[in-house]
Length: 370
Image (cartoon, rainbow, N blue to C red; front, side, top):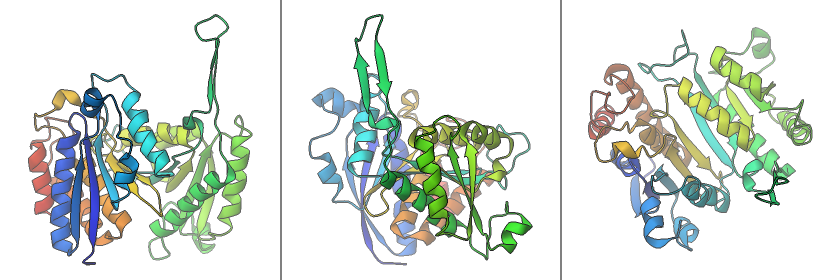
């Protein structure tokens, strides 16, 4: 119970984004009251409608405005009247790069009562975290097109990393693995021999060392160098294609995974489906020493706008991640525990319109069970 005051920027975004963020804010306010800290919210109407009315994706001083806050809660980006890519690059990528949110953190956790397409798997089997490098790699746009529109057209987009980017991401992942499991609560996937050697957690580097030999030579060397600073964490390696296979066949083999921007983008959506779909998946864009942004992973779902049927749990869990980042770990844990209770005991489904409750009622249920 810190008694602190935190300033939170809320970007509802498009479609059902404002609806789910409203429920997240409602739950956050209840948690703040229960655990004796304060939250002040600032609302920003940025998204498709702002772009259509102004011709700008973001105001010129958007980053400076956000820097006055302690964290950002984002709803969803994507408008049916705006060409795909404009808002995503202009808002999501722009803010990630400008605020140096170099970690994309994606828990992959199956909650009680939530259906997974993986036959026979239970919440004990699906409970790991993906650490995705978030500001480098192929998404930085290094490259171009020459002779466009001709038969000789050439397109190049390069995966570029420097050592600093790689090392800070890998070090964050090792620190997370260390925090996630201790000697009192070691990762249950460790062998008896691992535990005898003092290991408490596992970090898997997901790469492609056999083909992308330059980039992953760097990643692999740094990975094992940093591993020496974390003797409690067992380092492991898995090709990205094998990672996808084992995420489906044996998700219980994973504890924490660290990977590049592009590979992380792909495997985290696979992970989201295994945990029951986008309606329950949350993520954070993290600057460990600065301003971070938290969001539900699902899209804006414009066809459900204003109907009150969309599942807000991913946004609520994103809010819990935000509180954990801010240091309000007890409140964060209470929100997640409540969400886990209602998935296991209240909701009929995670799907829009099939939950057995309205969007607003789901938020109320989380508050009732805090």
